[in-house]
Every structure is written in C-alpha cells, then in structure tokens.
Image (cartoon, rainbow, N blue to C red; front, side, top):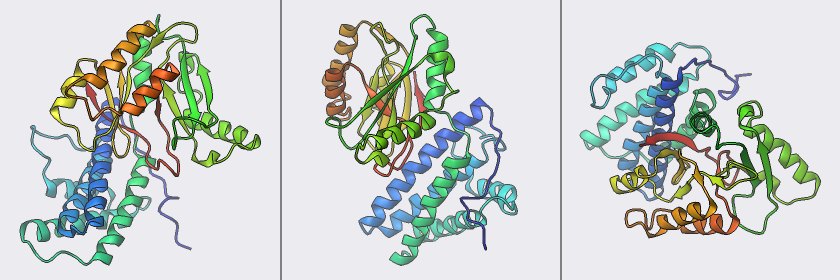
Length: 333
C-alpha cells in the first residue's frame, strides 16, 4: 500500500534566523493560496494560476531556507529556486515528489497564462491543483521549523524579567466571544516550552468533554495579554482584519513595536513592551480604535470584549472552525 504523504517525515535543522525566514515565507505562501482560492471561486482562473505558482515559490524557499541565501534586495530568481528545489528534494525518498512536480508544472503554467496569455486551464483541472496546494501547505506547516509566539514571549521575558511573572492561556471556542465555557491556565515563564500549548489544549478539551461541554472539538488555545496573576501588567494584543497590510497600518503599529502573525484572513499583533497599570493599558487599547491609520483594520469587537474582560486573547492553535495556525510574519519596530 502506498505510504500517505502525511505519514512521511523529513527533518530540517534550522537556526533561529532560518526559522524566522522560513516562517515569513510560509506566511506569504498562505496568503498567496488564500488569494488563489478566492480568485478561483470568483471565476478568475488565469489570475488564480499566478497566485497558485507563488504559493509553490514561497514554500520551496521555506524548504530551502538552510541552503539558499538571497542576493541583493530583489526577488529571488524563479529558475534558480526551481533548480535548487528539484536538486534538494526531487529525488528525496521521504519528500512527496508530487509537490516537486507541482512546482515545476505551475512555473510553466504561470509563464503560459501570465505572459503568453494562453487560454486559462479548465475549472476541474485548477480545482484539483488547489486541493493539492492546500495539502502541500499543511505538509509544510508540519515539517518546517517555525517561529512561534512562545519564542516571542521568551524574548519579552528576557528583556523584562522583573515584570513578566506569569504566562496565561485561555482554552475557548473561537466561534463566539461570549456565552461559552472558558478555561484559564497560568504558567511561570521559566516553564515556557516545557508544557506546550497544544498539549495543554488537548488535555483541557478532554476534561471539558467529560463535563459535557458542547463542541469541544472546535476549541482552541489562545495566549493572554496579562503577565502577572497579582498585578496589572499586560502586553498589547490586537486582531487586525486585513488580508494584506499597507504602510499606514505598519507605521501605526511601529509606534508600539511588536510582532505580526498571519492568522488566516488577517493578522495578530503582539506588542513587545509590558504596560504597567490597567488604566494605562485600557487607554492605549481604546486609542487604537480612534487611530486614523488603524480605524477599520483593528477588530473593534475584539478590543471591546478585551476591555470588558480585562485582558486580550489571541488564538495560537487551529481547529475545524479556524483551520490555519497563526504563523510569524514579521517584526514591527
């Protein structure tokens, strides 16, 4: 029986900078595939092909983050990336050859349908390719070493060890902000990474299910803004509702400083400077709703509920309702 591509295993040993680079590339690939899917759904097949190819282009670079160094500030050469990807993985038994072939095929299709303006491929053909791309993205998420929010919190703790006394998580249903059972888990920062959020979430969901809490399969775990159980110390956490960031949004967030994670259809922003005092935190959270450059992009409901609850929560795992795990996109400083 043929081995499933999702049962295959590869091991990539990336250093911190390579993990950052690979995470950004994965995030870009996710955005390209979401765009390809949206264009396909609207019947823009030729345009969808271009974004399908760039999904492969960014994924290949993520798998090559330890092998290829970009030269200059321009876009990496497409033929060079394809050649390096074929050389590294084309004959690698534990890497799905279908993904290497897909890269080569989409490179050719992009040239044919973007530059030569040949008639677009038929709908059924593209539908199958997009399905394979989603599998490829899932495979990449599973195997490429990434920067996670725990890495960000470790940095915040190292820079502010006297202020960061606790890390807290909420296990909750992401379909609604209110009226669902919600668990909070506190953890000293010295144990960050020893008890992984995914493990906490899995065990919490089993406990909730034993209490007959409905729809526990949809529950996720999120990181909370509070950094001390007994004092008002918090980070700024925002939900940004925009598929592609613009300069004005980034410039506004740069005043705060932090890290952006792509969350699927938008972004999560985690500030890197603890704020002491609840009134100061509340004042700054409210200011984002009035900011001219952020108005209409910051999720107003998320801010409002955060102010009511007294802290913010940002999802860090996936579920059937939220299928994509938030992933590091870039630092804002």
